[in-house]
Length: 355
Picture (cartoon, helix red, strand yellow):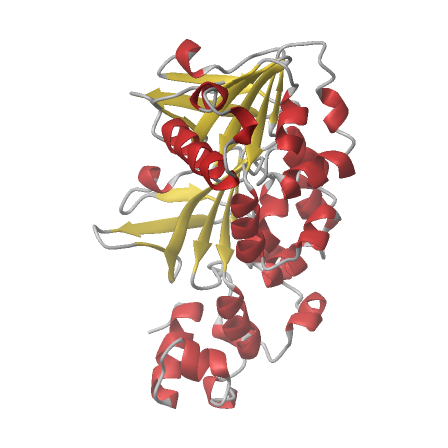
């Protein structure tokens, strides 16, 4: 290619420093869109193997036996995140490479980076299009000027090979997961544990949907459980836990935050109504505030809230007196920034809806 032409005068007899410099120039030209490389003598997987920087993705391809999806017989696209992209993902998920390669969803993650039967060459793209991946999920490919993005992730460059196209990505694509599968990666482990007490709820939120789930943070659940004088391991002793959890679920609707109106209501799974309060600064419901809105899932939407939503039938009789709260609890005294027991009592009132 261009590298060979630039070195033609001296061939491989050029000093290594010169070869490295020319290679670096070629890389810059690719990244700024001034040169589209071609690799007509290798397949996409062969090129990835010959090019530094794709080691982790190649290990994932081998681990899942998906390298064989590119056998040179068809027109395909391999969406290849760099090692830097994978290292950023490992840091975000706080796992090692070995743990990533042992994840049960590794196959679906790798399949989400494979498009069979379609060459996604940059010059043949529309402003926006959706494309099926090997996982069965769709990706959205957009093109603005010379910049191509896949699900919002920048394509650094595209390389045409014998059996398709290699698209180099700056981030790892994560296939959409169900609401139930999304809880743990979002750090909502107490809610996940609570839902696992009820097979119907767990199966339902893993199913097709659509659903809306208001998901209290772990900190919110710890405050709530302290009021009930139970720990996270004792969730099953709460007689109204099922009703409580169903008060966090809207069935048959993926309600995004833009559709929540001030004074509007939503029918919850347990039969009660949830009332919304909306200003320019915040969206609140049932004594809780929306802190992370609109986490899209394969079967609906997830909203993280800063308090447990209590059904209207829940009264202070179900809760321990505020005076019995352990004020040394870090969730009460530190995470919420409460400087006195009086402030803790005021927060506790929000959970039971009393004046």
